[in-house]
Image 1 (cartoon, rainbow, N blue to C red):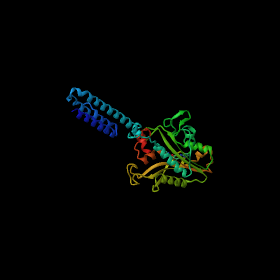
Image 2 (image 1 turned 90 degrees about the horizontal axis):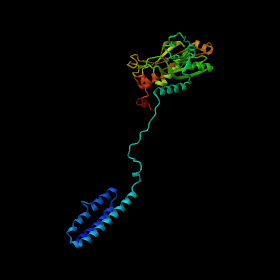
Image 3 (image 1 turned 120 degrees about the horizontal axis):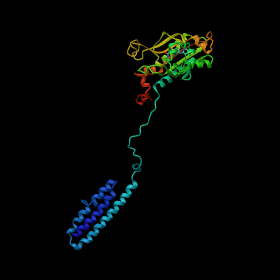
Image 4 (image 1 turned 30 degrees about the horizontal axis):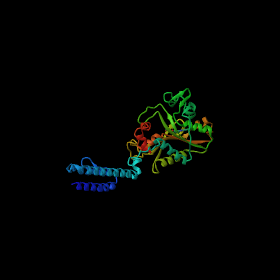
Amino acid sequence: MATDLTEALEALERDGRALIAEAESVDALEAARVRLLGRKDGRLTAVLRHLGELPVEERPAIGASANQVKAVLQAALEARAVELEATRPKVETGPDLTLPGRESWQGARHPVTLVIDEICAVLSGLGFTRVRGPEAESEWHNFSALNTPLDHPAADMHDTFYLSPGILLRSHTSPVQVRTMQAHQPPIRVVAPGMVYRRDPFDASHAPAFEQLEGLAVDEGINFVDLKATLAEFARRIFGPRVEVRFRPSFFPFTEPSAEVDVSCLICGGGGCSACKGTGWIEIMGAGMVDPAVFEAVGYDPERYTGFAFGMGPARIAMLRYGIPDIRLLYEADIRFLGQFS
Ligand code: 2NL
């Protein structure tokens, strides 16, 4: 009986050492410990259950052997644990590479800025230089120099934001061209984009502050054919080579003759739809030959020089191009909207 138990203890030590040496992970090592030394179902416990069956005088020797085997196996477990810790791949203690990455932010330019830059690039190719000027203007630069008397409805206090007597927020970018003509002699070809201010309701198609973009060409011998050819070429470069352009007579105080410029509807191609209100045409700008009174005001000789000018709303063109249904979307700084233009 004692011999059986001694053999069982020897077998336990041998098997235990092998099991511990084979453990390739902390979990496998713990499983080995439970199998060998676990209090309830471990192999050492199983051997010790038979201890009571021995004669009393034989028990101390087998008990001592059992304690020795237990100590040996515990030491082997600890040694193997140290080995496993030393060979554990370092990445387990570094950052968790399985976590999803942090999303990066992608900035986007405002759709109206995109259209302004595109228009200026096309006009640059046609010889126009980008210029800017103040948003707080004198009544003279905004109205008087542009052949617009102060009793004209556009100059009314109720249609224009006055900052102080004689000073206002510009209602168009024309004063920028007036300043250019005061500072430079012809030939001149400039494009002036920028914010303008009018007392308008803020609804789906109007805003009290919006981007405008005007162009001006002045030289000896410029005529209406130059205006038509330049603006038709401009429209083809912006809207595509097959777009049709039409000029309708119109009126502006600062041009004579004047025209509204339409392009064939980009949505239906000219057949008529809701975007063009069934007409097949979409208005994109106003234009005309510079009125000689404007040249007089800036000190140019109106007998020597002629020129053409045009003006448009880039927001309207951005809305057409991107199918934006409400102008207020352009003002809300909602990144769900703006992010679509990156
Ligand atoms: C429109 C029409 C236009 C001009 C702007 C201009 C400027 C000078 C002299 C003469 Cl300095 N004209 N600008 C001319 C015709 C039309 O704008 O519908 N704008 C949104």
